[in-house]
Length: 217
Length: 217
Image (cartoon, rainbow over all chains, first blue to last red; front, side, top):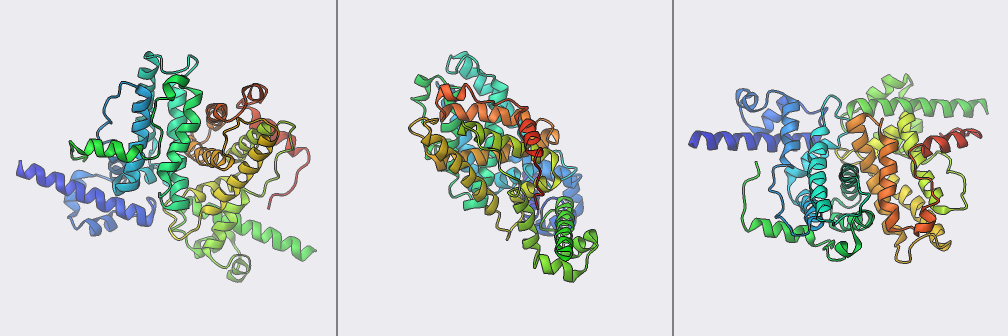
């Protein structure tokens, strides 16, 4: 048990160090040796957990999927908005989530399969939209997969723009703008009128989740 | 005149070589020496046109703004859609536009001011939305700047997702999805019903522009 705890801690230190090195050097330029130095672990320990640079990147990209899902809401559209808002909050506040999102969007990271996080978020979005549709919260023409794809893709760009223009300071406001622009084309108006789309939503849901915390790695 | 032509050609060769090196190595890892080798020009020639690595990146990011604007349309919303669609078409087909967009979204390019292209496209979008508003094509509550920001940010992410998942093959279809999801929240329904939002629009507008070509650098 103690041994297992130590392995989990070592894995976490390695991932955090790799995230820092990828952020500083870019995925392509970063080397395993730089990550070894930053983590202060042996080559054997690193390769035990991560057999390659790509495996390290996968581990970092995967971290954004490890947070607990937001609580179930009677209104599934609210649950969808909460999922987006709290992810934005984590992007602002958690270096590991930030590193994962940046790697996912690193268009220079040739050879690295960056489809995992897109696929994960498309699935999360599609499932929530299906539930919303089953409860008649959506307009009849909605294609769940297509709408999930638009939400995931546009969120990716909104966060990149926010980082470039304000180092994420304006992210909550930009995310609120985004959902207010997209949801009217898919949600029944009377349902949407009752959904909280405000920019404070992400912080509020995060605080709600913290009341019963779990380790995310 | 001949001398000037040669300078323009040299500048273009340097920019194309720098774009290739940035794509291959990432902005941060790329060096001026690698760009010199790729371009096959003297250090003096390079520094005459571009005093720094940042100036080279600025030149590449600026290239996406150098294409001619789409023709004026009686319907300004159509003109806005055409501007987005033809930019997507250029991203698919022009390596220099692609390199500029990737640099703009290179979240590892610390020290490089990447706000220029965002500011350019926000301005283009805001102006077209203002014209559409003046012609009563938009719903009364629309905030032109906010909607332009949502369009620019979400486009940036849609193209990144398209590159990661399909190497840009599905870009026209994703861009069509995006505008069909956002425009209903800002455009008067009877106006929107007459706008061509189809995925073939970018190629069609590009062909229209080619009938009277100009060099874009």
